[in-house]
Length: 49
Image 1: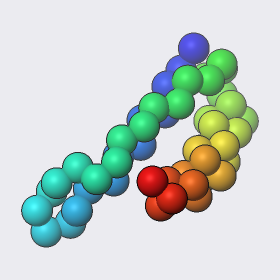
Image 2: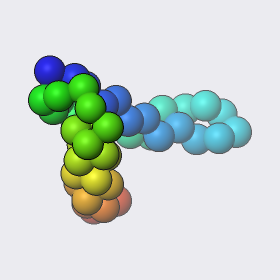
Image 3: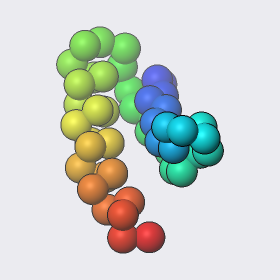
Image 4: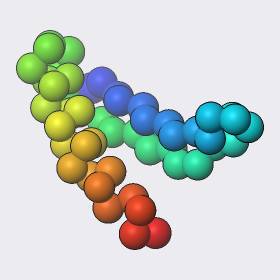
């Protein structure tokens, strides 16, 4: 199992805004691409918090 870690920080202060991890199976380019695409869809909902 591989993990994709995503962090968003405020540029000037370096303050952490959001952090999330995604676990997925495989360590191939295709598996990573699928995980990134999933994360991008999921991250669209973050601004609704």
